[in-house]
Length: 136
Image (cartoon, rainbow, N blue to C red; front, side):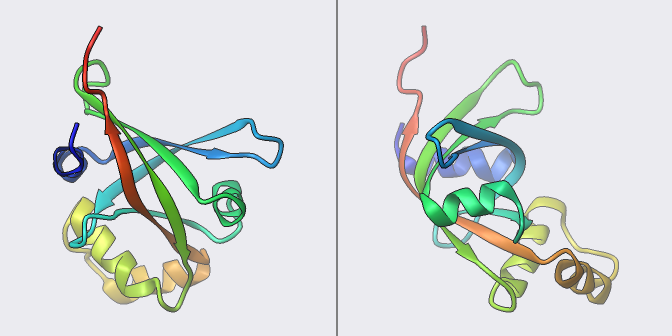
């Protein structure tokens, strides 16, 4: 599957499972909400203290299994390299992320305060591969 097709799927389907690597090499899986920015990178909002954040700071390789709302049906796997964008640099990215997934927030000041309070960061993934290319 070409990366453009994977990005279009992610723009329409936001439920995913993110796989990162623990220090001992075993996978760590997290349900996440994902979207795609204007440059084609995957965006995920999480907390500074989350295990996935620590894992990605140590090993930036990330994989996503993105599911359609019906669970059984269309899905993709997308792999790439992640970077962590902390606050304050993450704030406007978090606003854009929210708009992409949920539309306009009723109180942007409250949203920004919650992002600060929760110590939110953005996981930004540059895609390198996507599939499946065949079914079976």
